[in-house]
Amino acid sequence: MIPEFYSLPEFLLNANAFEFGEPERGSRVHHVVLPPWANGDPLEFVRLMRAALESRHVSERLHHWVDLVFGCKQRGKAAVKAQNVFVHVTYENEVSQSLSLELRLVVKQQQQQQQRDFKQKRKETEVARVWAFT
Image 1: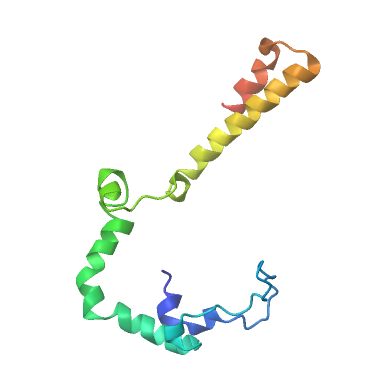
Image 2: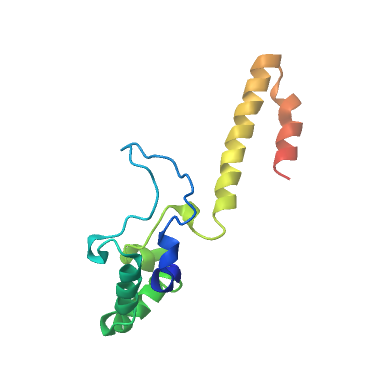
């Protein structure tokens, strides 16, 4: 969670009346919809979030969260055991590798299409493949 959840109730309001559109259910997207325990009040929401964060219960367990997000249970076997695994593209340094794979698939499809369209042999499209992955 970002610090604003504990200190800045204004971030929950659409004070500038930006148009965010309408979801399928038809109601206009405007202010953040708060949980029932906040009674529709952003100040109350932030107050209760801060009280929870500063509580003894959270203080005694915060190190577990740190292990999940930043530490030894972020990846690998410890993450699997802790049920803390996510889609690979959400991890740092993984997006470019995923895009690279997608790019390879697109280039391969384009090469195959070019071969069909222009009746080319594979050797004639090798230059494009070498260029795309250097």
